[in-house]
Amino acid sequence: MSAQGLSVDIHARYFKHCLTMLPAQTAGLDATRMTLAHLCLAGLAALGRLDETVSKQEKKEMVEWIYAQQIPARRGNEAYRGFRGGSLFGPHEACENVAANSGNVAATYSALCALLMLGDDLARVDREAIVRALGCLQQESGSFIPHPGTTERDPRFIFCACAISYILDDWRGVDRLAASRYIGGCINFDGGMTQAPLHESHGGHLYCCVASLSLMGTLHKVVAVGDRSRMLRWAMLHQNGGYQGRTNKDPDVCYSFWIGASVEMLGGHALVNCDEVAAFIQSCEAPYGGVSKNPDTRPDPLHSALGIAGYGFCRPDELPRMAPELLLPESIVQSLRAARTTSAV
Image (cartoon, rainbow, N blue to C red):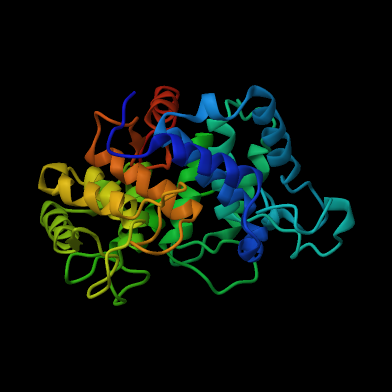
């Protein structure tokens, strides 16, 4: 598949390099290797270069590494199950602190996505443990915390919980009515979506809310026609070449996916100035591969993967389509849809 607009070959090499070794200044991200792996694989999939860039042997080794991060059963760790972000603490048996050697919803979401892109059938995933952990992490408000012992709770983790449940086709760990009510309370006066009621509208939370509702099958129940129009208006008012994540902020490549995917799910593709969005993403390409946050900054896996996926929404004839509700190839999500057995709320 041709992609004359983007430097596909050098971006494929960039992602392959990031899967192998990252620069020293990224050492602080060691605990989030699972997310980095997900992003690099998603970037390669968005380019249509995953299979030719990552060999069968490399895929096998990555699958084994991912399963090695699955938290085994231990007394008192029911809420800590799932996948951890990396091997920072070494083998599970070497870390006696349950809270330190903990799974979290973000890493579990990324692990499942990475396994699917690597061709794994998820047969070794401890589904029951993950579902039970999700049930422990949902709050009375309907929101989720990423792991026990934290005050963080917002739509980011609702999205991760919904994505996990959708991929596993098991919603027992999520009270969808409560989660949908929480998200409904995040619809802001200006049409955007917020972290919590009465907070500032943000492009990332717009995505997490809209994608969560889409995965739960409650998008059209929670977002009325008028709210949908206001959301699309908010998104279009934040397109200034590229998309701005918040009012009065500079455009940022990552919102090519966060806001761009939200617009796709809300049915507003025809409203987007695709030429401007695509041109902004191209202006952020690094000559040695990767896409940066904005021009003249260094690339990183997150902005590279999300920028290329967002570019695909604007140039569907050039790149494979990534599913807007999950950072996965559309072909994989279609397979998941075909296997759905759980009815919507």
